[in-house]
Image (cartoon, rainbow, N blue to C red; front, side, top):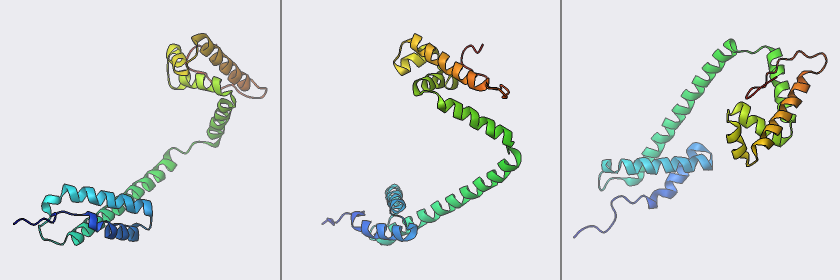
Length: 176
């Protein structure tokens, strides 16, 4: 007579898996992710489990190894990011003047009314044609062109303030 007990019943082990995962991660969300990864790995490797073996120990081992792998991966990624940050700081350090200029352009762009900003963004930054941008916004093409024209005029007037050197070039159409 066959054994009616399922060979691979992990439901009864979920409590232990969750407790151990919380103990390792110290975080409920990370613990649930770790348990989920463990269950996926266990399912994928279920053919390696010996019938009659210690299921709880096997699952906890998979969970522990998954945690260690995740920790090593995070540490390795952090080291790569730190190394990249050091290289980036020595190579790409922008001059203060450039940073200030970018902030001025950004502030000018965000000072535009929302509908002008949206129209200009779609054409000048996203590279959409006037027809595509008008369709995206659900407005007639003439309205789109008017909004873009007003936005460009506003940005040009901000650039033309006395004492400022004009550097801003409005792209995505004519800039006369």
